[in-house]
Image 1 (spheres, protein in one colour):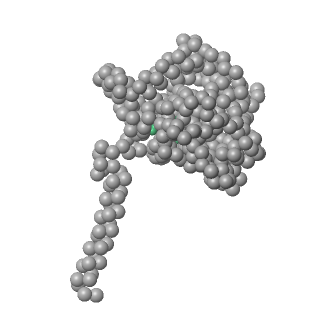
Image 2 (cartoon, rainbow, N blue to C red; image 1 turned 120 degrees about the vertical axis):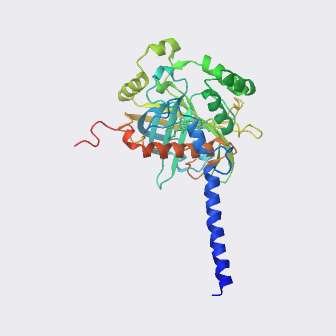
Length: 347
Ligand code: HEM
């Protein structure tokens, strides 16, 4: 081969390698330090003393359960997801508290969460992670990051005030947090998707929906002062006893957006009169400690969706998916510190 042709080939190879290196550098955020990356999002959640090794970087305290989703069949009107066909589907889930500290006292957790995986025959899965507030405090992942940064500015007490001044949804969230009743059980909490998703039915019709798991148990409100007096693990102890006595249930209700509703913004509640479809019941039948349970090593990534569901124009699920993957990678790499049964690894 003539020398010129070899040089041209080598230059071509060098170009491909340089292109790949640039792609990696861009993905890692080295070329665009101002860009929000999943690593930055996860770093921003860490408490002042650093993240607790082996645990989720948010919603670190939790407890696993198993049960079933009993589909009535009504959901097939909106989505051809196989777990909406009438029947019973296995569920793995996790009750949890928002925050990065797995040792936090249960009474101090204002935001409670529910992670769910519903499995259908043929390998289809629906994963979701929901919380009890009726709306989210900020409208975009960028604002979520800015909020964490403002909260971390302990040297500047005005940082949070300034953020709230320019973000009315955070002030509304503060009003909810200050006035909404606390329950004394995960079984009495309502868990909301807040983010919207597009459901497609067997006829190929698309609808944008949000959903809520509505508890069958009646709410017994408890004052914040009384909650703080309780055992730091009272929520865990209560749900263990309650489910041992009887399975606990939630109805799954889908809410369908009207044209023009704010589908991309989880701070905006849709009007109360929107179409609602009751599609079945979540039955929690067995609670297990995180150390023994099979939810510890699960990532309740909200973009793991079955056929008949997909993400909408709401920017959160994609950002959450990327951040949960980083958190999952970090905590599973620290497996020696994660919750484990006392006997594991011992002779
Ligand atoms: C950009 C915004 C958000 C970020 C950066 C974020 C970050 C995280 C991270 C890092 C985890 C731990 C994941 C793991 O290690 O498995 C987590 C868990 C969780 N998040 Fe988010 N989150 C965001 C928004 C939301 C929203 C909008 C909701 C609810 C509507 C939510 C509900 C939950 C719940 C319930 C869990 C616990 C799930 C489990 O038990 O594993 N998050 N979040």
